[in-house]
Image (tube, rainbow, N blue to C red; front, top):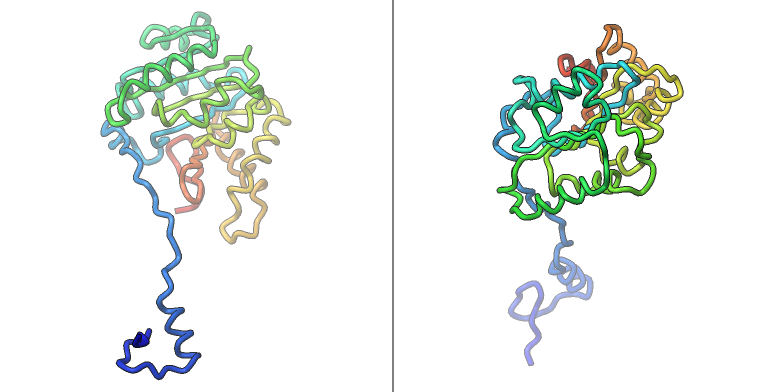
Amino acid sequence: MEKVCPNGKKVCDCSPEELKQAKMKKKKRPPKVYKVKDPEPSARFEDIHENLPSMPSLLLIIGSVRSAKSNLICNLLMNPEMYKDMFDIVKVVSTTLHSCHKGKLLNKYFEATDTYSDDIIEEIKKSQSQYEATERPTFCLVLDDVLTQDFSKNNAVSFFSTRFRHYIDMYIIATQSFRAVSGLIRNNATDIIITKQQNQKELMKIIEEYGSMFPTSDGAGDGEKNLMKMYQEAHKERFSFLYLKLSENPPHAFIRFEEQIYPKN
């Protein structure tokens, strides 16, 4: 049987080294991993300002008592410059529904309750699972100061943070205690809002958690010191806040949603 030359010659007179090189050239190229295209976000979110959280979003709001967390939630849901009328369904769980003006507003305009149970999460999953991703209702779930729940435990609140994007568009968790928030929630948060912290230990825990994401522009500086500096700059005004948009690469930082302070434009 006539020997087939790997170099395409009619008569193969290749040296052993040439044969070896030819075989190496004919090896299959290494396999690549390609991104599977995700479903497009609802067209309703196309016009939101680039400084706001992008969908899907797990927004963690951390702040002490009277740091304007409830005011911020009202703005997110009712301000025409933010997400007013963008969600088909808004579910609010808040312990302050009947005790403050902002809570009463949320109770008036949205589906709301002052008592949390894991059944709330399970019902959302069940109802949203009936639809294809491109057809399901846009949905925002807000858990506001649900203080009776220890987020560090393995409950539905924590586990939902790993799967929320398969069911809803925005998942807002507002808490006074960052140290009580589970690692699952912290690791899956796409957006962080840090209002004024009265407890220095709470603040330092936040700085330790996210500081490494915000090194100085030369990449050699202390990220924790840099984040603390941005926090202090953001809180020169009363009821201001520092917003960390972790979904960006590199992460962005803003004073409120108005001024980008990292990275510098």
